[in-house]
Image 1 (tube, rainbow, N blue to C red):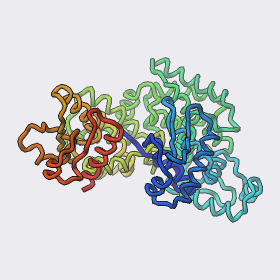
Image 2: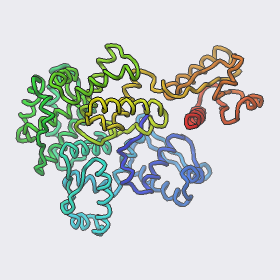
Image 3: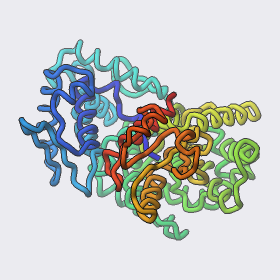
Image 4: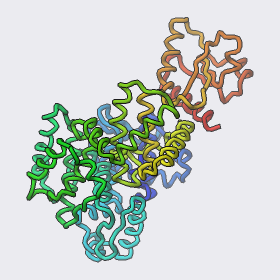
Length: 500
């Protein structure tokens, strides 16, 4: 499922930086020369501003200096951006996001390297008034996660587990594990700790990927940053239900206890690590963890049981194999939103809710009603994290069924002069390209009423008489083999139909 992001820190970026990101994304999508005037019309800003931001984009690409990135400006043609086949814009967008003064400030706060307002102002040659004004914006951003900033010391205030999980999302969203942003934390020492932790997974024949190993390293680095300033966890009574009669937790606890001196090994700290391990699916046997908590009556386990009790009634019946796989996924996400509140994105910082609302509104409404029913039946607080759950329940739905199953059916017919064999290939190409995103029904043009029933006619020969059958907006002229321009045109028409 395609995603947008709730962790792009839009409110922390300048208008020029936001426009620079939009232009880069649009150039990458179009893969052709675009004039300054076309960009100005697209983004509804002045030509003068487009010229200024295009210069910024050019400078940033030169500074980024990654092999294969090409930015061309031609007076007669316009602007072209080429991204290498083995890369994409995510890392470049993260690179320019890091240039935001507010992002730099927030990063310093995370690393306990901010100091006082006066110190920061003197260090970076800003007025104290400017720093205080920027801190207000950062506080507004943090408040959505129930995190605040102390007025004098400019350090995080709030529940410790919220702060640590926020920092994990913040650094992972910015750096994606590519570089090591923790200036005062020894990377090799952290890697050694994580290598030892992974031996526990190897014992259970459970492999941790390179990316997840890197994410573990980010988490351990964040733990070290927090405990250096005496920010340690207090035990939550609910966590006890994860430990009773849990043989794996005993091994897990003993292994973490061996890092005494490098990490704080208080029972509450180890319990939080275990909750993170479950939330990120790092435990080698999620089903065993679920079975333990089902017997002990933890809220995430009880919520997962309730989920399946009502799922068949509201949606469809799963096979036993599907239910077994789904149970592990649902238990992990219930564990995450039970422990960490008001985070709407997944563990990578990606946020699908707006995408779901646009393309799958009927599924979204059904899921929201389903979550309301689960909350009414149980009163479990995790069911209040509705945006987070809609996003993740949709992921499960897309794994088990066509995610567009409940959406409006778009009737499509293809009119072509191609021989039958080639015509069938074009049908297959259209269906394969669009059937996952849209609920489309392809009808044969040979049927007597095909054109009358069609919402959209795709035609390789746009005859005048066709236009008299349907309004012109629902006729799309395409090539005999779909090109990128064809795909954009078809998506534009499909999107417009869904919005009507």
